[in-house]
Amino acid sequence: MSLTDLAVLGLLSEQDLHGYELQKRLADLSGTRVSFGSLYPALSRLEREGAVRAVDDVTGTGTAPLPATGSLAGETAAFRAALRQVRRGRRGRKVYGITDAGRARLAELLEAPADDDRAFPLQLTFLHLLPTSGRTRILERRRAQLAERLAAVEARPLDRTATRWRRALAAHEAESLARDLAWVDGLIAGAAESPEPAASVESATEPAGAVRPDTVTTNGGTTA
Amino acid sequence: MSLTDLAVLGLLSEQDLHGYELQKRLADLSGTRVSFGSLYPALSRLEREGAVRAVDDVTGTGTAPLPATGSLAGETAAFRAALRQVRRGRRGRKVYGITDAGRARLAELLEAPADDDRAFPLQLTFLHLLPTSGRTRILERRRAQLAERLAAVEARPLDRTATRWRRALAAHEAESLARDLAWVDGLIAGAAESPEPAASVESATEPAGAVRPDTVTTNGGTTA
DNA sequence: CGACAACGTATCGATCCGATATATCGAGTG
DNA sequence: CACTCGATATATCGGATCGATACGTTGTCG
Image 1 (cartoon, rainbow over the protein chains, first blue to last red):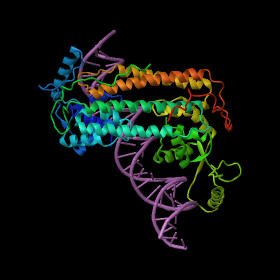
Image 2: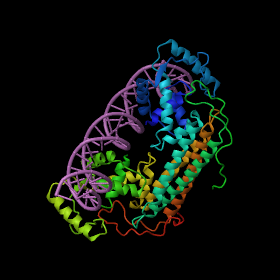
Image 3: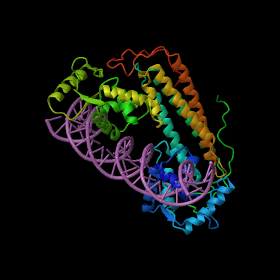
Image 4: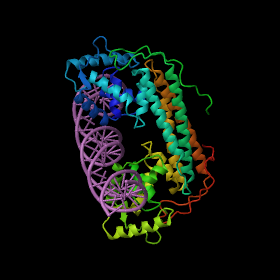
């Protein structure tokens, strides 16, 4: 169902995070900006449903990843800040972690929905969490969806009331859909020869750090 | 602001319509499907605000378009049905027409928003209602928006945690944005040499039935 | 030290949408 | 003729979303 749920659970499956950080990561990861007005209610709901759990803010206790801000000064500053935060009360900074139920829900969301267009980029973003069969299933479904939409656009009447812009729009939409279709076809071909699923949602704590870039993207010099 | 408002007012500026018909036209005109759960509340709101007005259901009274079913029997049957409907209560079939305030609001919506991606296709659909200067302004704004987004995508970190799918996604997004950008550039060039605005939102009661198709759209027939 | 930006959580109102309820009509179909 | 079925047509509900906004903390810079 929910777009936000998929994004939140996907990110938390990799690392414990708090709300603000979740949003920043998401903006980097895909263009999908989830507003705070969606994010915080979603986190509350997911916590109520048992999919996520508020964990101790471990920022600084040994194994914590601590995102690496890039600047040394920034990192040490953040570190000292974190220490102080644990000591004094400090408003909020609720760090969430995913639960087993949440992982199950994530697996469900990764496969099922596809109604919203913004869902597919998110599914792709976390596609590595699925076994090969699941990956192909998602890509095939997207392919079918695009094909259907393309057929619908090409079947549109385009009667005498059509202005030049309406015509241009229809033509461009058809072209974009055709191109997306070809791109997904490339992804499907690439997924078939995928070496092996490095980590799945079922196998819990695998860090999945060794995902090789691989040769990608069906090239594309013919454009321009 | 509202996507639905733009669609409704745009369609009503061409012809009086009722809710169900509005949705059908919209599905044909652009891929944007407006659900009834949005449409009817929007119509109520627009009526409350004075942008649209419920008009008499003129189905059959002389100049009415009456879609023409094709069969004679069908038409007379529809005619008699319409009479009966007016006589007896007959549930609903509220036909709406646009008011001057609505036309003003439409002009406003056609120019201003652009925050939602689904807004631009709608703006294009009704672009002929604006004078040339307005058209160029909208297209330029879209161009700027796309350029900004493209820059953002290209500036995305893409660190070591990136899977092949994340890379493919980023590359595809960049390519799509670049293509859209080029397309909009073409539209801008085409808008500059546009002959003259056939009808504008300011000139009120013009039926605008004589919108000439014009020489158009980089040709078409190549499909299928 | 005081202004200011960045961080961080949270809520409100308006809106949007899928699902659903309700009702009428024309076209079959037995 | 009664019956169903699908298209037409309006309407509402609950859940989700989002932009705006409020509020508090922390670090930075002049």
